[in-house]
Image 1 (cartoon, rainbow, N blue to C red):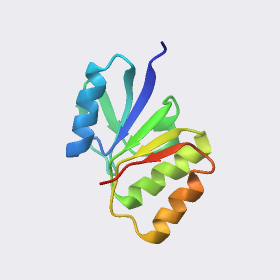
Image 2 (cartoon, one colour):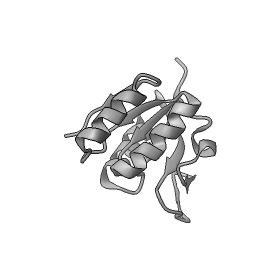
Image 3 (cartoon, one colour):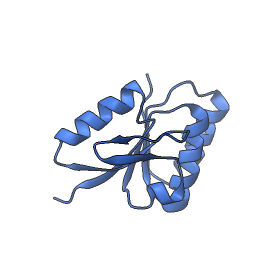
Image 4 (tube, rainbow, N blue to C red):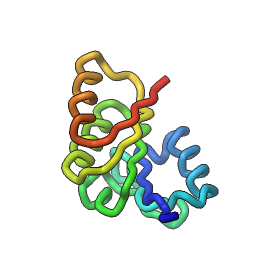
Length: 115
């Protein structure tokens, strides 16, 4: 089976770190891109942390988002343009933001699983 090229947004946060740890031990995933909403000169598992850009998500097939609502929408705009699948674990969306996510889900596959 082909590995899933994975991007983790919010990679420095608690949940981002758990996702990275899990992906590293699961042979179905290959960590390709790690992002944060500000420039950080650091590497995790040999992967440079990038900003949320088209270039950062170009070679991934799945984006797991654990950021803040503002960043989630940056990610969704890029993912929609590049036709990438997104899992959203971010919480704290307003009712209007929930509606906007639903609109994006008509263009790309989205799994939203907040607490």
